[in-house]
Structures are given as C-alpha cells and as structure tokens.
Length: 138
Image 1: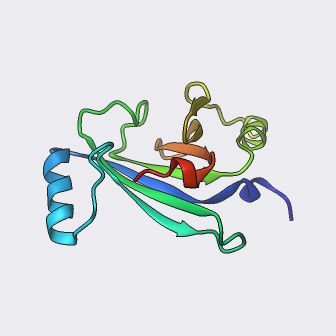
Image 2: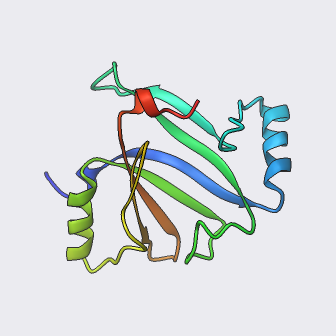
C-alpha cells in the first residue's frame, strides 16, 4: 500500500534542550562513554541499511541549550528528526492534508530539511539525507 508512511525511512535524530548543555554532554561522555563530537556537540550513531548494506546511515543524538530557538515555534523541550525519502512528495502530501510547513525547505551539505508541527505542538524535523558516507558527522 502506498501512502505517506512510505516517505518516512527511520529516526534521524533526537534533539533536546538542557539547562546546561555542556554539563549534560560531559555527563553522557563520562557516565555513558558517549563519543561527543566537539564540532557540533552530539553523537552520530552509524548503522547500515538492511536492504542496501553498503549504505551507511546515522541517527543523531544532540543536546541543545535551553535558550535555543531552533525548536520554535514549539514550546517543547525536544524535537524529533525523521529520515525521509522524497521530501518534496511528502510535503505535497502534508499540504493536501492541510498541514502547514514551518519555514522554508533548507538545503545543507548533509541533506534537505523541512519542518511541521504535530497535533501536540511539537516541531518535527523532516530530513532527506544526501550521500551519508561522505557527509556523516564524525
């Protein structure tokens, strides 16, 4: 069955606000031995695609400053990033459902991004990754 769920390919990341993001990173490094990347302050957990084992993907874990406005207009302390295939097709579907985007589509070296707000007011980031082996956060 084709439908909107076919656009979502997995969890791209979990982002959350902290009173002291540096202290939180230090705790996760010390207590859980998570290898925090100093370039962006998070961890990219790498994995292989089951249908295409040569493809390396990643799921990002990243704390944000409590003052960050990246989650706006949501008031939530966390944001979920969903990996997407065919971002444009998904955006057309969302528009047909009356769901408005937050901001414009953004193109970055590691992929394309768009945002929507879920029924509970949480901002959801939609990420269509580019070539992940070349652009993986290391």
